[in-house]
Length: 304
Image 1 (cartoon, rainbow, N blue to C red):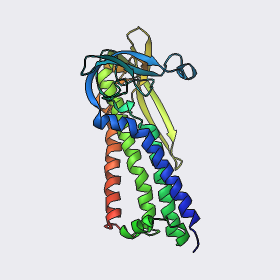
Image 2 (cartoon, helix red, strand yellow):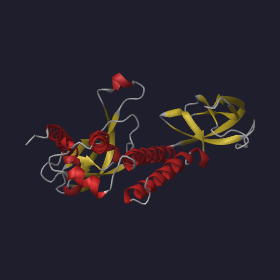
Image 3 (cartoon, rainbow, N blue to C red):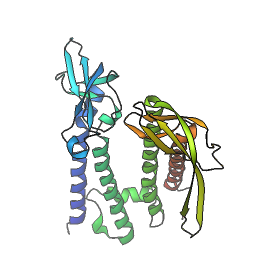
Image 4 (cartoon, rainbow, N blue to C red):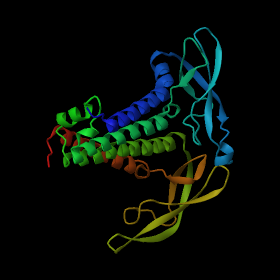
């Protein structure tokens, strides 16, 4: 009997990655499920040692939260992730999950504080390996690429995969999470502006014509209103309205409301719905469309 070395090696590698994924998620997931909850207050920001390497003006920070345990003990913990733009500010109330046996082992119940990026990277690597492995089995028809537990052939048989349907599933399996991530990031940016933005009065100082060359060689152009405003410190900033005329009705001399984040006043925008929600709606619509297509292909409704 010939040993299936390829299948054994790939299986061992996938199991190793699953073990690493378990190590990354073990503590935060355990605290999320079994930890005791408490309400804490953000009392400060902890600065990462890497801040000097990234930027002195915009250091990496993590919230420092103080909370009381069920026994009355006062505990102060820092978040597990550092960001140039923390999702909370000093004085905000944050829910904490802490270990019953070690109160200092605590998890801030904030999305940014969970290890989603490293866990997502490892999980994505596992998915890529499995998809390429299934693709190799379909294209080669070589039984030597089978896994030792014969799970992949069972998956191929159950979903009736073939060299035509599988590429569609392969592409859609990436398109859905990418559009989902785009929806989340654009929504969080808009929500951050709406919740924490500082409003100012802007003035349309003129119109700027911009043109670009399309892929077919033709030229597209538009006229964009130029808007100037001053932030809380009195520093002037100039922004370009995203919509071109005639979609934008702004003209020179008009007054508009501008909103900006204190940490990025140069990235202020006009405080209207079309500056916030179109990207989120676009990515959300594409995610739903790709998800529906994925379900149709997976169920066999759409066949080659």
